[in-house]
Length: 344
Image (cartoon, rainbow, N blue to C red; front, side, top):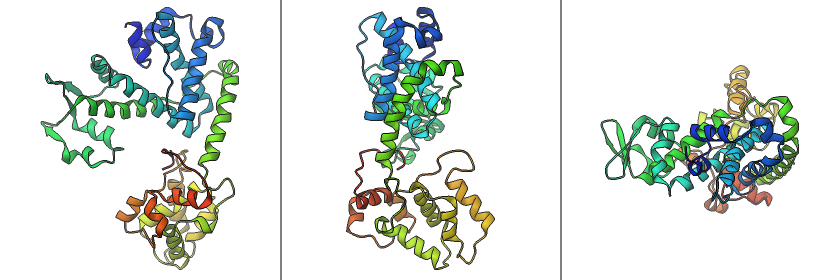
């Protein structure tokens, strides 16, 4: 593989082969003076993902800079793996995937190679469009909420969805993001962590700041006066002993969990229900909060989903300007929020 393509797409097998051929192994990457630029770029990849949701661009005009770029990729993955934090992993995966999208959008010659690497069932047409198998289309488009991405609005023939190249590249971004998340964390030997620790500490400091900015409660716990009217209504229904539909239970548990309430605090709200079954409620709550499968749990539904499910109760004027119940809480609590919140 040529050095430029390897640097642009360091996740390719050919890029790994290029790195093995032109470097001196992982130990030298971690401590060798000749690889300081690769380590700096690797740290920048992770910091860029955390701070700006982007992977920084470096000049790739010569073989040295291209080799440093390729080697920065495994270094960044080791850093993310050592920290093993869900928020960090998701932000890093998204930033890498968006960076790949940006590069691939201007480099259509590499499209078949990326498709093969990510094991995507797609075929190139003579007119520059692509045929993507409908199963892969569904697998990679499920996060796309716009109506234009619905399968019913696609040109489907013989089990393949016909797409312009730019739409396929957007789906490839989802495929790559999913692959990164599934691959991390890597098993990093303990002796390697010594060399990584200084950069790990830098990342952890920025990660803590990011989490603090995202915490709707400022670490102070839930305050009733900031709770959106839909959640207040569901809590009142539960405390009045009314039977709640599953959608309301899910919305309530996921919202309370996002605000940091404990299992005991959450289950106490349901304990007065006439059909309360502690064993069933415990399973449902721990499933939603992720305690059963070792994850951070499900995210609360958006306002649009709440409306669709018929549980958008008593909307007030602020509700007209927000798209998510957690953002309602943030605004009431005086917390800023950006264009992206991984919990929403």
